[in-house]
Image (cartoon, rainbow, N blue to C red; front, side, top):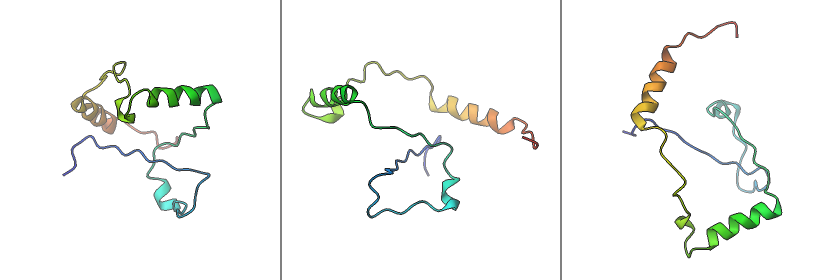
Length: 91
């Protein structure tokens, strides 16, 4: 079994579509949200490249600023609470 909570992140490239197919309507509704990220400005791109290439491996990015804000059990507790909330059928 897949451990809970389970989340999938997917990417879609609106420019390079060779060998790919648009998702059918039945699959589009499986995604909760869609974020559009435009290409970064030249200076932003340069900063990203510098951050990655400072080390010999891209997976050595500085993760020290990252911190855990919630444990898996807390996410599950919030999911249980959300599942019990009443939903307005007229919304």
